Length: 378
Image (cartoon, rainbow, N blue to C red; front, top):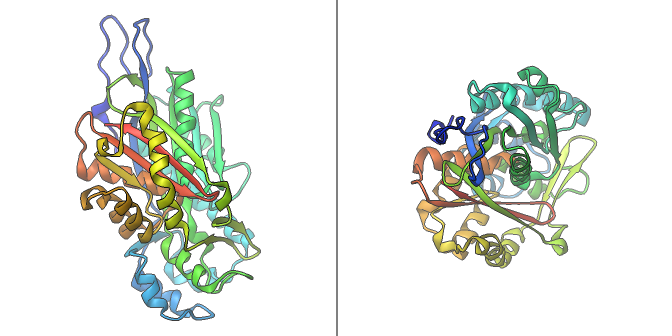
């Protein structure tokens, strides 16, 4: 999705916005200029996942089929041909990382190319990328920059192993970049291929039910944004962000590297902790702008799981329409880690078509326990 409606008319006697400066005393804002997603080529329904993988897991979890249905995920994209899943389950971490490194370049390059949509690549001064599902060095950001023909003096920031909230850190780095260098553009990318770590048995010390739930929830996706500077009120703009680390809850969610694969822990109490802390978090996020939750029209809540959406929807008194995009993404793609909240934003733009001046909030959660938020004005 290239957001042509955010192209800025030239000020009198000046050069065209965005990315061009004049001496006019105009306040500039970080502005979303392009947004696009891509997925690996293989799509599986939850029923297919059950037949090919989950019903063969060992040890078997009681009521396993009912548990995976309760995730509300209907289909996901994965990086493997589904016929290969039995062989994939036997792979070790090093072989998974080699396959992951190749797949990331394919899916990320497709989402980036659609997001930048023919922009003069010489204007792209920074590239910020998040990925928690693989590791290689040189990283995919360098290899993608080479493949895309970006400048050799490109500023690169790679954000690894933050998990589901990393998209907001990508956005914050981009906001800082355009604040310092408003004449430049920034590519932002979140690519997560959780299916690299598909297994039919839990890791040593891992709870079998937790293994089943996390593998049923997560899918693969890449989402890219192009961010630049534009005058106040012209386009979809990021107004501010806020972060809270709940240090006392750091054991509730984790991402670990095992001999067979990466694996995740996800405590059942996470939704309750988020419910307890979300009101205070939103006050710190919104109050400096003179806003409250009732002033927010569009909510992009990371669908970490169905219980999170239900609990936060009730706590914030949100209607079905305000949660629709999060539920739709959960059903059609699963939890795609850092890419998920950007899939929700893309869905809001495509389906809800926000009016000029509407406010939106993006909320993400991840290991730490960490809460990240951003305020947008459409």
